[in-house]
Image 1 (cartoon, one colour):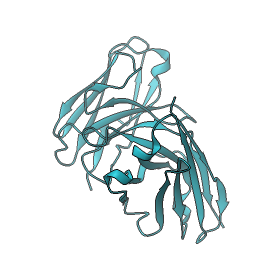
Image 2 (cartoon, chains in turn orange, brown):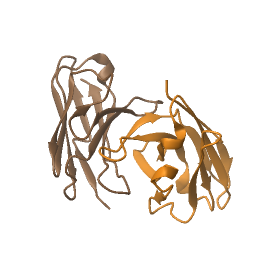
Image 3 (cartoon, one colour):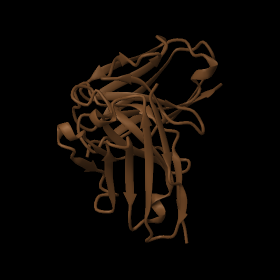
Length: 123
Length: 107
C-alpha cells in the first residue's frame, strides 16, 4: 500500500524559511516522479512543482508564484521528498500535499496523496 | 499557462440524480485531463485520468469524456458519499493547472 506522510508544519514569519518532508513507502521511490500541491484555506488546489526521477533526469519544474523561492528535492536513499521554502509570504499559507505523479510518460496524474501539512505564514 | 474553467462552480442535486460537470481548457490539451474528488478536511482523490480512464477502485457510476478543450465528468446516479468538491486538472504541460472546483451539494 502506498503511503505518503508529510511533516514540517509550522507558523513562520514572512521572509522566513521552512522545509517540509514527505516520507514515502509502498512503491519504488527512486523511480517515481513526485509533486507538491497546495491549498490555501477555503480555496482550490494549486500545483506547486514536480521532480522527475533520476533515471529521467531528476529535473524540476515550478509554478510561477514559487519559482526561485521553493526547491523540490528527493533523497532516494531515505525515500523522502522535500520542499524547501524560502522567503515565505503570507499568501504561501496553505495545506501542502505531496503526491506521486503516476503514469508520467503517457497520462500524468496525481494518483496518490499524503494527508497534507499546514503551513501558516503570519507576523 | 493553460487556464482551466469549470462549470458550474456549485451544484445542488438529490440522491439518485445524474449530474454532469464541465471543464474547459484555454487551449487544446488532447486527452491530458484528470478529475479529482475532495471531501472536507481530506486529501483529493483521483477519479479519472486521461479524460476517460477510471482509476482503480473508483465506482463505475463515475465517467469522464471529451478531448481537445472540452471535457465532462458525469455521475450517473448520485449516492450520499458523492457530495464533495470536484476539480479538473490538465497534465498536458507544466504548470499543471487545476480548475477552480465544483462543489456538489445535497438539495
